[in-house]
Amino acid sequence: MQFKSFKSDAKQLAAIGLALLLAGTAGSAFAFKGEQYSKEAKISLAQARAIALKAQAGKIVDEELEKEGGGSGLRYSFDIRDGKATKEVGVDAVTGKVLEDSREGPHPD
Image (cartoon, rainbow, N blue to C red; front, side):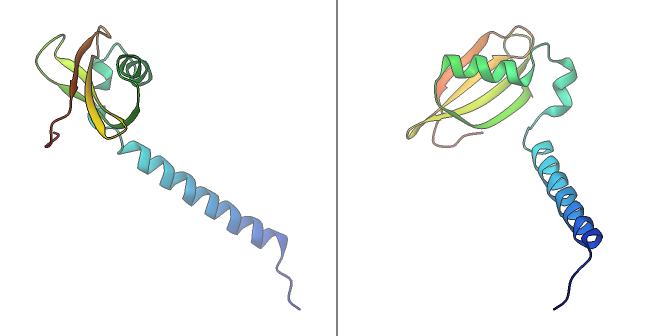
C-alpha cells in the first residue's frame, strides 16, 4: 500500500482550486459586453439588472452596455426570457430610465 504525503495532496488541491477560480474569473470577464464603457455609467450593472427585471419579469439571457441613440446615449441592453418569449429592455446607464421594453424579433442583435 502506498501513501502520498499530505503536503503533496494539499498542493494538488490548491492548484486545482486556483485553476477553477481563474477559469470562473475569465468566464465572467468576457460575459459582459461593453465593459469598456462602464466608467461612463452612473448606474451599476446590478442596479440596471434590477430596473430591467422590474420592467420585465423573467431570466436575463444576454446583457451588454452600448452606445446607442436615445437618452444619454449610453444604455444597458438586456434580453429577458419569460417562457418562449424574449423581450429586450434598455436601461439608460446614466439616469436609470427604461428606454425600451419590446419583444425581441426573430433575428436579435
